[in-house]
Image 1 (tube, one colour):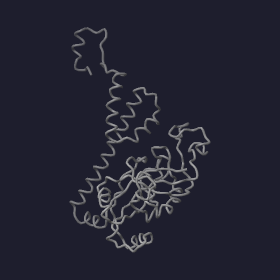
Image 2 (cartoon, rainbow, N blue to C red; image 1 turned 90 degrees about the vertical axis):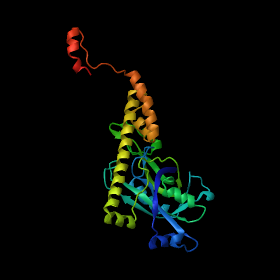
Image 3 (cartoon, one colour; image 1 turned 30 degrees about the vertical axis):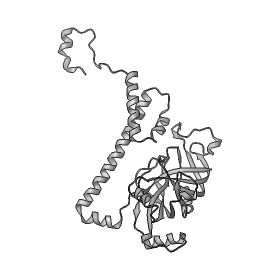
Image 4 (spheres, rainbow, N blue to C red; image 1 turned 120 degrees about the horizontal axis):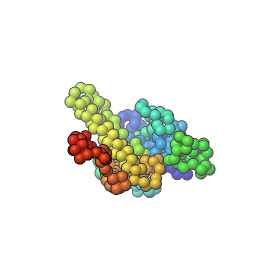
Length: 306
């Protein structure tokens, strides 16, 4: 079966001698450093994605060598005309921080890609550098998708991905790497952590270390990014709450799956719609009343009305 998983690209990387040797092993002619443009991609990780599936670390390790030499295309259109880049090196990267929703340490498959600098792909390079072409999706095959609840292949069990059974979340565990076909630039990622892989070059690192103002600017950018992610999660949580209160009939896990694929503009629009519905279903009223009290008593207690 063909599994499509999405991720994203990072910025340009300086071409090191060892990288150039790997690139030239794939090229038909000897390329010089100034002839190539390189960047990194987060191909896939071991977190449960928006389709309630995930690659365990063992599968990522199996896929890593399979992606070396694979082409980067557009929207999974398998045409030679759309070939834009090629992976020349991969690595499974372990991440520090919170555990995944599956309960294990986070990791992801990182790929190094190269393009030949030509007049024809100058605009594509500019779009990658500018963050326009960012998300990518991989096409690969695995032996089976196993149910996290019962351990059977998903097509053989009765559990539904995204639902919870006696406190256990159901997702598909993609096991047994078989082949890697391609990776594509796409518009909408399925993995929640899809985003630019930020990596400072040695020059930027030295600049930040030597110049306090550069270090402060980098710290400010990191804080702004963290604030933006926090705001988006809070907005998504508010939309989930409003949808649940509006009596849609959908389960909370289904609502979370739906909203997990939306951006800030879409979430804000949903919030407006469901806020109005909630106010119609649950009209606001006075929280305090003084039934049976005299007019004088009520007037004297006006300071305590909410």
